[in-house]
Image (cartoon, helix red, strand yellow):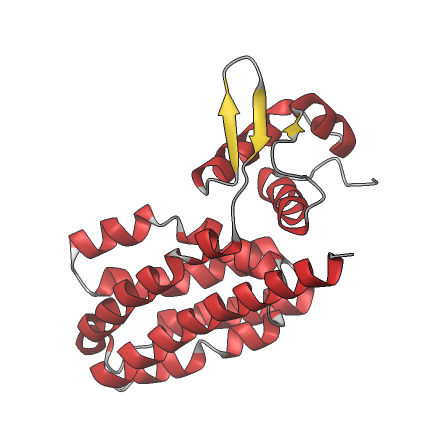
Length: 220
């Protein structure tokens, strides 16, 4: 596979993630760092870091002296985090509505970043702006316990899981953040909470539907 030698950890992670979700790597199969590094023309360090982050998502498991192996994980198990995140961000949006009222510039910057990344088909950059958008409203809630729980979900990794499955066009995903921004700028806590909850739960459903449809299509 011809890949630019400057491929970074996140790009390698995207490829490994796609292979796991598509079944190219089967449950129990070993992912050999040296082989992946040789395939992509990089050192073992970014491969090891990519595998470490996939282990956080419980997609792989590392064993002493045996390396990383693919876990047997169901779509439903991966999807369990979506309603939890939706509940957290619904509360965050309600709390953030007043502090962010009339000042959506920082949110607009992240949406514009998503639009530009979508036009360039740059998933890594898109995820960075997507997660930054949601972090703004979580931090604006001024609730440290909520922020800590949100960070424990590893939103950047889970967002990548969803988008690498191409559950929606990136440009559409960028635009789906606009109603959330509008609600926050309007200072409407009810609207903001509902908008962000529906946004996250919708992608959770799309992820499940996409992966189950792919699995059905591959059945003999």
